[in-house]
Image (cartoon, rainbow, N blue to C red):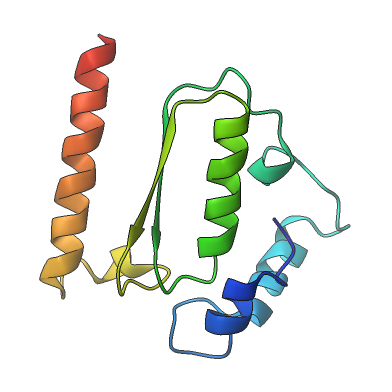
Amino acid sequence: STDTSAPSWHRFGGFGGYGLSADSMRMYWHSYLSRGESDWRVQPLHAELRGLPRTRLVVGELDPLVDENTQLQRKLEAAGVDSSLVVLPGIIHGVLRFSELAGVVREIIEEEGAVLSAALSQTI
């Protein structure tokens, strides 16, 4: 969502520290949706979610987007979508870019890869 007023934005969306600031996010949205239009294809909170396949959301505990992910997971459940939300303790937004530096990031990637592989093997 283009709204940066959720409590997690106030907790983690200040300058620096948590990987994504509210100011940066507003700039990204402005350059992506320059006329402020609402588009469900880039804002899944505004989409009709019924009928989607199993969905897994993964977000860091310290990510400014954690509240929006929680809200999206609730909306998925309400739409009857088999979904789950994984909140990674102590993890910030954009942490995957540190995979060469931090073992914990490589572990996250390996775990999510295993979950995806298992899910794909069940659908074949």
